[in-house]
Image (cartoon, rainbow, N blue to C red):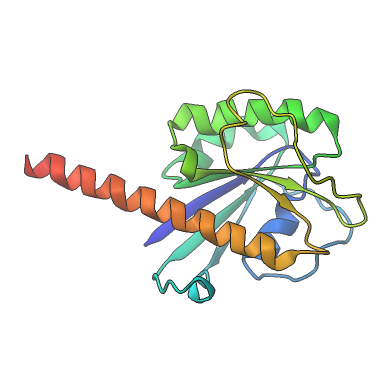
Length: 185
């Protein structure tokens, strides 16, 4: 099964660091900020063995720039996407407002199911990770939310992302079955 996941969100929210970590491209969780220009596509095969699942899956993780200058390219990014992950920094108040725009542009417009979406509150290295409730707008507070702290709990982030991938694959399988049934009938 081929899964296409978009990593979107405000600039400087940690999308590339998370994408590198989850695709096992790099274990480096810090470093100098280098903005993504356009999009980077990382391909990997997730390891579901830890969860006792041995699904055969290839993931294309599209690490999209948070720069609104490339907004005209967003429809191309969205084409055939299986899921959307909105990454934001909970320490930056403007990110909480801006992620509503990302939700509207990438999730609402595609009519994705809630289990095909994920919010990641990414705590940058050295920040004081805030546990607890993050005040989110109405459409966002229904989506699954994970706290990301790659310095202290990297494997928790990896496990949560694997569960999310499992949900996306399940939604894709159900959709495919519905299509096949509609053809038969």
